[in-house]
Image (cartoon, rainbow, N blue to C red):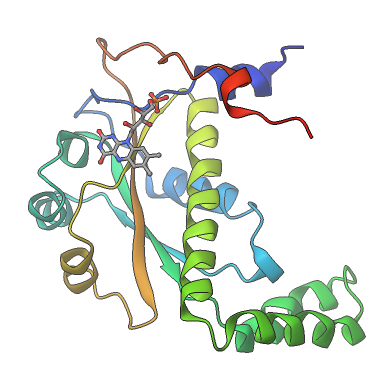
Length: 205
Ligand SMILES: Cc1cc2nc3c(=O)[nH]c(=O)nc-3n(C[C@H](O)[C@H](O)[C@H](O)COP(=O)(O)O)c2cc1C
């Protein structure tokens, strides 16, 4: 049942060793984010933002507040995947391009906005959970897109969230979901790690 998409998914691994001389162009970085943001989000909220840390100066600011992980200085770019607390009031604005493109009838907009308001408005934990889901799904799409280009990637939780938010000017309703390094691998990376057996993790009900 294999095909190029499945091969791409199955062969991804977290990169430990990057070629520090390899650069990605800003156009490549922009394209990776564009592809990543075709990932789904609840109510089409698109409650994310990406800070591409790719200059020497910006990497030097991020590294000490991210456990000095070598990927930050050696990968071409490390994205700060920023989650935005789910806020239903942005829904009309987010859906307007769908209405304009004829994908969704205008009359349906309140049918999305009202349940979203009921789901999130009084529930900060849900707002935050949604931001984590969106950021994680978007970052995942970027990892596989990078893999399809022959690039390595490393999702990272090893950072000081408050320091990253302060240093990179995140707003009050934003927080760093994860860091995602992307770049050319150098030799010596680990092979894909074996997984828990499906029989242990799947309930067929
Ligand atoms: C949310 C998340 C956070 C992670 N944080 C780090 C990290 O800070 N540093 C690191 O080297 N690897 C990090 N990893 C990589 C994991 O160790 C790796 O995904 C896991 O061992 C499975 O290996 P694989 O990605 O090569 O399949 C993280 C992975 C995820 C999904």
